[in-house]
Image (tube, rainbow, N blue to C red):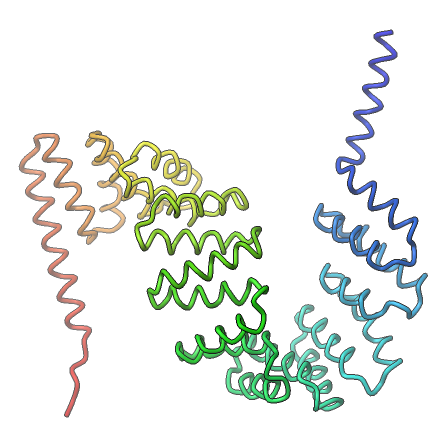
Length: 389
């Protein structure tokens, strides 16, 4: 009986080893049953791609294209493009373009395929051709403007994005990219106006909220930034940077408990997010929970490819707060060897030496701190340019 049970368990183990994701089995059955349904194929291919099985996903796209002929060229091409199967995508859009020579859409998609492949010249050629085929449509102008924006050809990009908005003033994506462009040029007020318009037109698009939040944060309008980041993460809870930026805005307002929750969510999604872990530790420092802060700083310090000055200083603050001045001194001496003019490090060294009763060393550290602060003020003053009459 034991042998039968053992054989049964071995067969079960082999089954789960060969197909660890049972939902993938269900998706494969669905795709076989609905062989002509592109949505069933899409669900399976996206699942395969998410699990790193890129070759099988691409082969299924090729098989579907061969079996279905020309009946699903547009959605199949877009799916292939999303999954990085640019050769399949090119075949789909080329066939679609051959069938509808007076249509801009497949030409525009071909331009995106070439852009994704890194062939900028071919991408620009096709995107321009799309605007020439149907110049009365907003989409080709938007795509060309967005492509030029990525190339940082800002003047041309602005012209094409504004042309798209002349044709379709309600195109939220064009307002968003125009906002990016204006922000790159430092025109923050105009960029803010474009991002606000994009959010008004497409309130359920998280990207608009994240963009608007980032612009508010840059201007130190943290309350307004938080409103937008909260909206964004509610719409896209799997966006790591959304949670991180929300935490950073809470941190700036000293709302540390809320910042901790946001940074923890970011770390659940991406455990290796160095900035989220660092600022999570800083939240605990600001709350005086030095032992909890060290739980985040010390692993980050051990795993860092190079010595991080900010981690050394943060850890020294924690050891000082825990009344462990010798450990703090060890870190601070390493820090000032790396950055000899770090005024705050010398000041903290002075405090630690005082706690250890080493008055002469403490006095020397305080003098060094004052000296480097004075020199830093002098450099800032020298950097100012006086106005001329």
